[in-house]
Length: 486
Image (tube, rainbow, N blue to C red; front, side):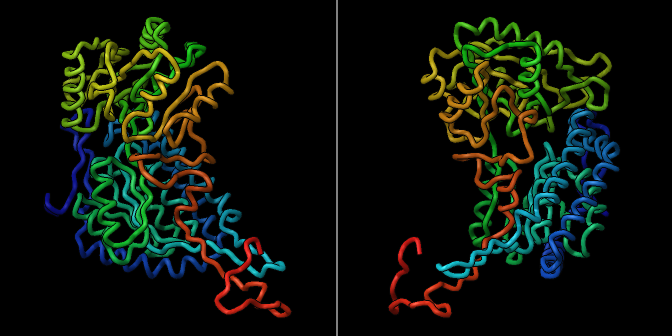
């Protein structure tokens, strides 16, 4: 295999460490996989939903059995701390089990037979589905597509990110054995592989998680083929502390990691924090103290490390420039946490976490999705002011409200342009398997998690015999419309 045929991945914490490689799929590989998926899907949909659910439970078992080895590989290829990587794999198993348990009820036909007629609504799968997954949570974001798609009766073709292909590749190749041949595929490569898959005439649904630029390209290709999409794109999530927010150590520890988990490279991470002006100084003190407790920057395989490197040298350079630009414009940069003494931070793509004070909403580090361990904090004067500022911009993925009064927090959250609003937490600690997740505005469309996540992979199809034309029905005049409500 030549370098042109394979995709190598190096450890972002030690860039001289080659973690592994995967084969790059050609256009012919994509054609063969899509053809096999189409054939397999036609048989798979005829399997009882209970049989499909059992296959998902077997996937969950594989994830649990391989959790430790997969977590180490994921930490090495992505820079995610080992404990986080282990948690991601085990949470992915929970996703598979949730959909296995929920699918029989959610996919059941809906039958009505009364004076208005006989109506059957059934949930029909699309067939071959393409899933394009990112590098920052590759296992769970693959399972959030695999589990609902396959239990609904589809086939799945997964194209992982070239920045974290290894853990997903190993898991999918083993999990494919739980399904009929040809039903589950993994195809590696860059933009040309993605384009061949998304634009293929044999693919009938595309699910994408990633950034805005790639999302626009995927959306354009899918639109040209009239292929429906589910898209979870970026976010510029605000965390808003109301004046009665309880800044306990536990709450502050939670907020710090909501900003800095996976070195801030999470779509639903806190990207900006709004604090009442009167509470700003106390907040800065509490936040930096919490970071001293919970932030340790270093090699993701070292015990106790909570923040690893960013994924590429380009990301590190961009984040360093963003912070320098803010400081030149008058911001103050406060280092957060400590560095692990036995890690050579010059050997990888490490960026020191920073709290940025003295910033304003127009600075690039606030106005855009910085996607790194930079935490801008901004003062606000009243609730109308902070709502307007939090809702500014084109993104609307997540947000959070922090208050000692839960009812007040829920009322306030209803004013925010966000697809998912957390209360007194943010990021992973606020997720629920039953709660649909996705964005508004330019943060995407469609949902993952919950019943809504399964609904993305089926189409309601109807069989209807109107009461007017059944035996004993009175009939209607030709061309007439039915009476509303009948």
